[in-house]
Length: 152
Image (cartoon, rainbow, N blue to C red; front, side, top):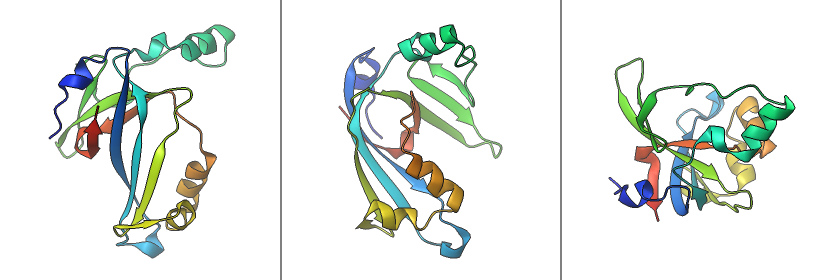
């Protein structure tokens, strides 16, 4: 388990974070383990509704008002979201904000072997592949605590 003290003390600051995520392969590649590792600099301890892009979007009518969390509830606002899934499994998620000029270092692994992005994407369903190829950077991300590799 990673010590989150530095994370909790980074209100509005920039912090280096590494994490992993697993992607579900298309049915024809069932059993293939797809893992993506990401490292970058993010902001922590800020409120989504206070982002200038969100305020400007609401003001211009490009987006609606900020809603409640899409899942879970705040355990420690604005850092940690807790969630109990339909099977009763408890998970914690950290909330991060990619910086505008953030260059992410991404490593793609197929069955534990480093591969290219193109190879990795070829194992995904067409819809997941299209989302990944879009390359749009979200305004905020929520990462499962167990997927953290390093903070700070």
